[in-house]
Length: 288
Image (cartoon, rainbow, N blue to C red; front, side, top):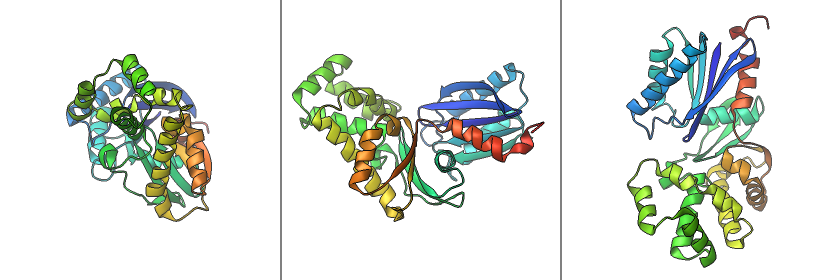
């Protein structure tokens, strides 16, 4: 069996495939070695290995695509996966960006975009990432992400650039004080997830002109700062992530303003990644 994992900052989806068929699927917490401790990640990997063992499966290969799994941090995941799944397991730890590119571009050239809790992008040519504008995280970058939308929204309701009616409705619904918001953003763990968690409220108020423009402007800045530097307006944009999926009309509006073409939008890459590895890694299957 091969194990394919797609891990964002919020959720990891693990899919086991044997004889070209899915045999199990589990959604677990997100794993990101940039923002989580070694112990946190180890506990989760150990638990996942136990779950796989309970399924009675023998893992021959693992293809892990994860947020934060760049050259500097991929070793953390490699070491833990080998420790709990075995030294003889064939292992590839790749960035979530490569996973996104393989999912939306396949074997064609394009620009791959991630718009989820965080954001990222790359120029994907001949099956490889050849250029990547650094994402920089939700404090310095991550334009257009769920965390960015949440940050812009809080700025708007707390500084008064959004209508008072929206502020009143929001604070009443979530029972949040300014002090609580500040504490959760600056003192508590995973502030990016906290900020991104208000995307449903933002989506529900897109009929408000100010909210609509806030979202479109976030996507315009994302495209200007992350995609335009590739200087390939001829290539279609393939978008992965819940924010890109649920706000796709606003994303397409932003792209139109910049004369860019959104070619494909998917909520999550795992289905396409399963297809990719079934088709390209046939040596792991019998009777194909």
